[in-house]
Image (tube, rainbow, N blue to C red; front, top):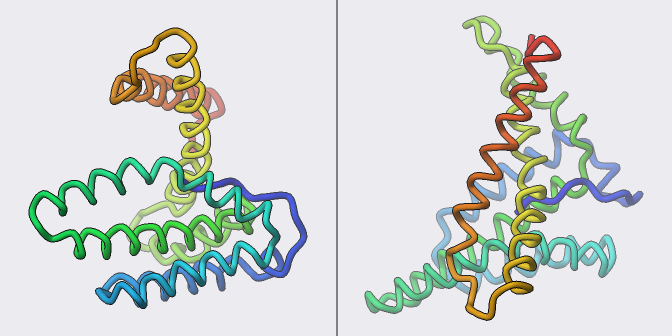
Length: 199
């Protein structure tokens, strides 16, 4: 759901990472308590406008990055439809799309190394209590890096299923995807240990 930085020189790329993350934090704090669907749709429109300021290609990348969210959209909509509170379900769905869209915009327009440097700087006071910010920054970077990788792996599994079976895929992809994610995690951990771990 989070895309890697796109190779493009734009106004958003020139904005310091710290300012973008601070803006995302403020946007989350403002959007999260909203319950008015019209205001939330305005937030989605703002996110779309930000993508379009980078070009239609950036908007397509942003939409593609949100593809896994549609499973949750369907589940949330069906659940609230069953309990007779569909409007509340729509509020949750639109809020989720708006916030994920904004978060994705930040990762798309920021270099991963810059984000790690900012996290290390922001968490530097934790050294006083024995916490190493470098480890948190590494975990932060791995999450951002592995989400697009998992999305790509899921697409490969879906295409392989369609090529070999006529039945609908459903939830059959979950088990192999989880196993694949665990395998990637173990491989990454072994690579880190081989390089001396994280100081």
